[in-house]
Length: 295
Ligand SMILES: Cc1cc2nc3c(=O)[nH]c(=O)nc-3n(C[C@H](O)[C@H](O)[C@H](O)COP(=O)(O)OP(=O)(O)OC[C@H]3O[C@@H](n4cnc5c(N)ncnc54)[C@H](O)[C@@H]3O)c2cc1C
Image (tube, rainbow, N blue to C red; front, side, top):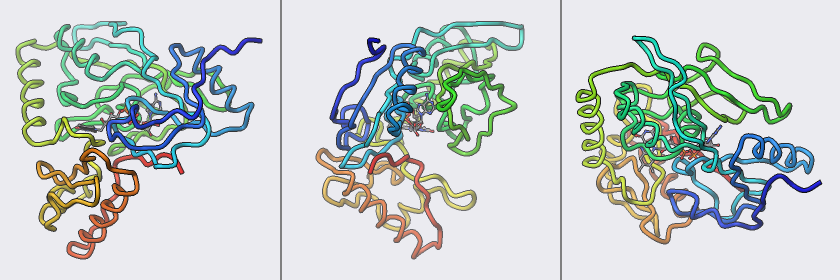
């Protein structure tokens, strides 16, 4: 029987991540449909090879040796954004996981729906944003999700998980399956107010974060109490510090940026130095928000 999917072999992952580092994937697939995704997961189970999932690759650091097994990139899993139900208080907005979060934000703006303003300027896919519970001080994905359709990696069955059964925490969703699509509950509101809030968040982000540098966004999670990670790193005197191609951004100290030719090794060396320095001064353990992938 012909395979229902295409596989790339020994494919460099650098271009698929915003950090622009990382070695090759043994196998890489970019499915366009949920059925293709299911066939890929079935193939990996049959071959007994590990599967690593990537969306926009904007929150990951891929190792220099790359990722063994199969890497599935979801950016082809998209079929537009639509309203699937409305009451005077709420509209349900549905999209596939590979849809860009910015496209979902644009749809909300165009339909005078409030709830996603916090996400202004957050890159990546809808699925990645849900898996990371992406957000800012103004809100996060857990506050607007109504349900998720997921594909279980073992049983290869699709299931719908309602919000009340989803365990979200700070930049985390407890989930072992693959998000295929999501429904968000947004509120009808004055379009001028939504646009204003969206623009304010975007302007603030662009003014205070190195959004056009190669990075994976904020590198460390903010500690539960006390100073945020960026402030700890800045007060520890590390802003602008370089280790080969990796640098602590001089715009926002919680961003490690790739100045052009950084390796994963350089970024990890800088990460370790930041953690040790902050711990020696403040006795705070900084935990990465960026997900490490590969060997
Ligand atoms: C310039 C810049 C600014 C940023 N600003 C913010 C910010 O303000 N707030 C914030 O929270 N983040 C921010 N980020 C980080 C990142 O953009 C978010 O975490 C984003 O939501 C990740 O989406 P992604 O599609 O790129 O996920 P990826 O990086 O591809 O994946 C992240 C994790 O999600 C998992 N995943 C991806 N898709 C799925 C799926 N369909 N099903 C199950 N698991 C999946 C992956 O396995 C991985 O573990 C920023 C990053 C950059 C580069």
